[in-house]
Image (cartoon, rainbow, N blue to C red):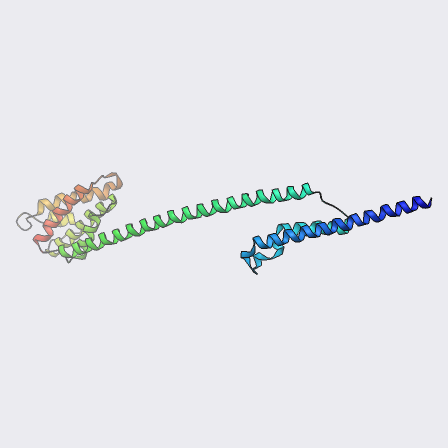
Length: 245
């Protein structure tokens, strides 16, 4: 009976020694891993990112140590290896995401830069054209309404070509009024004129008729830029004869 009791005590002591030896080995492995992590992250220095609390190995080992001390819970080496493998693949995954995001951001910024350069070039070209047209208008006439008419004619929008004819016809009505012809409308004033007192009467009726078609038919009336320029040239001939522009 005494021998049995002695044997049981001996076994118990051996188990305690085994646990203590395991604790020592685990502590040494943990210290080694922390040291390796510290060496690998030495470039972080004393920054916040260099803190041990951002080290997954350190946190994992501290968790193992905590559960072992409280619940006498041990983790197999295979689980540790699996944990490291998972961390490895997660690192690769997030690194891939970071690289992809960086590349996409670079491509987007490159496209935005090209688009911005294109917009700036278009705006600069438009400003140059506007300045050129303005200078040409000043050289052609000092009458601001005639300059406005020319801007309409050289526009890229078909609706502006019609506005050029309407504006020129309004100028013609003003000229006819200055010449002394009476009437409520341009048509009535032209009816009071003849070839003797207004040599361009036929031309005036022609362009005024086109203006009336634009006003009455609206968008249904098709006016090409070539035709608009021809009609405007007829108005110009009348205006220049009387020094109106």
